[in-house]
Length: 420
Image 1 (tube, helix red, strand yellow):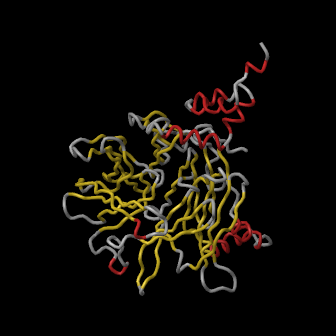
Image 2: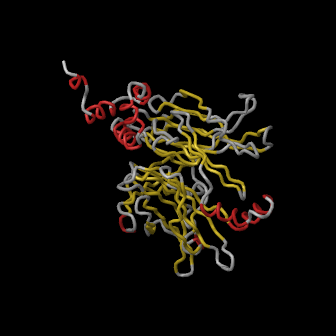
Image 3: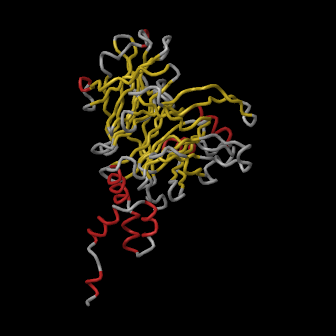
């Protein structure tokens, strides 16, 4: 038999490998150089992620970012809890790379976002803003270089002491927001850093949007705006929402001025074209900030079946029950394309946020159930409960976790390398 009959076409090998779970793929990388090259490519890992999405819970996990606890872990390691999405049982406690802490302060980074199996960590204490990428499946981590603005500003102050340089940098650059997504056109992971920049000789503060490319390991400035026209919300209401779409879109809740008042809007960044699109909120839920909560309701951005959505919810509820409206955007930049899909409710008053959807009409929700004092930090933290709530039968609910955690994520495993 000739040797050529012993080999399969590369296209067929690729199709077979796409059907394997991540752990099996890790072993297959050791078979030969060809298989290792295929499995390690970003393109293959993106195809594998999409292939596993056909099975809604295949290779899917819940992640809880938890604070350091010296009582349960004397080594003071950063812990991340991983839950099976099928059974909601804790299957593993992950310990990120020990280097994932600030080299000077020793404080650990926090998870900001997850995208296609990778996690973005951040450490922020003015004027230091440091970012890490981490793949929990492979254990690899990568420290991102300083953004272009940070590097240029520090270079200007190089002749001065580090303390003086950082003090000036603190006044010059202030953080506004972050984002993490995947460019489906170039097959590249990208981080977006939005900050306010005070240029010498210019009175007005300028908003700078910078983008990091994992492929090139470098930053580029893609846009500058007046702060009056480009102001995103901070923390939860302003967290970025990533939708794969055609090119990959990152969206933030922001604000704009109209007729002397301030209204909410959505700012979206096309990761491939590097263009910014503004979408106004539907008229029925858009309110001026002067009368921001006339009906005691607000909203936050959300991802619903790979589409940008809004959760419209009660800020203050004096009644015993709460309702959560789900609005989905049909076309970026078109205000009239918002559509109210359905209303979740009526839910108990203590449910603060809708975090995601499961099967058979069940939703993942978060409640607050008191505070807990930490002797290590001398601060009180919220004790939260993560519940699987049956909307059709409100008396049925499953407590997934009760304790202190900062954020919850869903993610699928990937073998994409951070070294190349």
